[in-house]
Image (tube, rainbow, N blue to C red; front, side):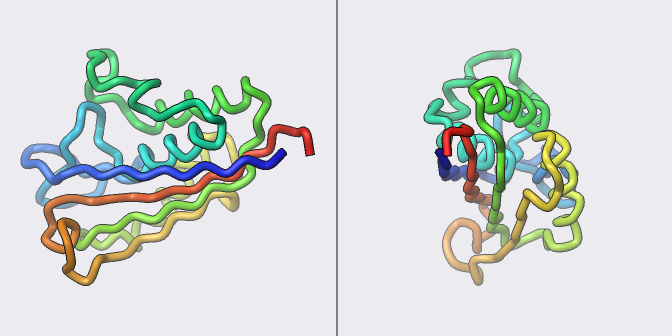
Length: 160
């Protein structure tokens, strides 16, 4: 049976942090606030995968109250989620992600994000979509207060 999951995440900008999106460190004046590396793109994707598996969300799996995840590399956590999917009998067929950021420009980093996400999940890069957009200066993203991301995942449990 095919399963679809949807994920969403948002993080505010913070001084003195590095900006990591899709596992790629991007030069910018600020990073994102969070317990881990605050990779909003990867967090949305993990929630999409967990949603398709009906396994809750990343807050349940990797709670921000656990010091073990402080500063954690979100791609490592994504690898754990992908392994959980395989252990539960799911094949990851396809994922697609959208990041909304007024700044910095993300298009030059899109191909590397796709490569790193695919590698972390153990899938082919053709199974990973990453898109970037602005909000035309509207809302908190447009005011450059933070970044948000959405993701969908298509899994197959082999019962089709």
